[in-house]
Length: 394
Image 1 (cartoon, rainbow, N blue to C red):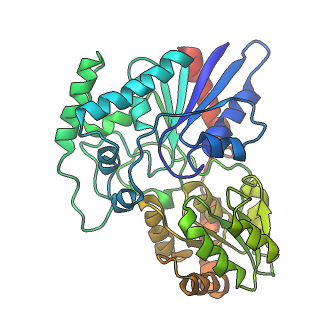
Image 2: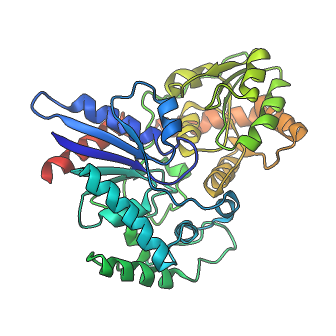
């Protein structure tokens, strides 16, 4: 029986675990009597993953992580800064990070790795174990660039990229691995699958690989219901949760929410106010047709699913990727970002996204455009097929 290791190293919440689970489910569905696969997960928030995916058909283990502070994440303007913040300019630190992954790989002995937002794992496995890298357009920069560009307007690319490349190659040489010719080659794995819509790709014009759309299957544009109904997906940053719950509970709309931990005071308060609380992440193909707007921290999976469904969105950014998502939604006229934890500001923003018609009209227009694109019917089925092809070729 061949073993597949699914890895999520960086990122907040379950946004980088959910697509891995969707692919793993498809892999297991495609196995036959003669070809059986053992799937094992190693993820940053293993406890949260256990809570969200109770009854999953695979073990979920903690991953070695080296996470920057929330302030550092918010300031990030390029992928090179993500690497710098977790220690890629420090030889001893990078060596230790890769050694931690070496231990995981030595113990688990996978035949293949499927990874999402896992640069250190990609380096540790380089030339040793084949990797199929999946993820959003933001976390999968094109590999053919000479350096990582800045994704913030008016901000120059990080000047230390050559020094970082030199440091990485020094460590790789000591480990007996081949050198990188350019920093973006770090993510040049055996296969790559980008879950993104063109409208959400910050590297538009630089990318020459296929975009697969959403990893959530069964999504489609639907008309908005008559009664206002907000779907709230929050909880990744606890300090934001209380003011968000206070704000949405003061609106006239029906509220449905996934908040991660259902035992928090915020979750219980919303439930007492008549809100519906999901114990596990719901199927977006079932939820989105029932709601008129979406409020979240701007994770790629939900924000793009809402775009496909034609739902206006309110984003409370918690890091640069969600800040960029808010900016793109504002540019399309399908949503707005609220960069405040003040209850009145949040309440007014919720009211605007629910009541100003241009948001819902633009969201429906963009959804019709997406529906006309030639996107795969099931991106995860396509990825699972590619993963198994790679596995059988090893």
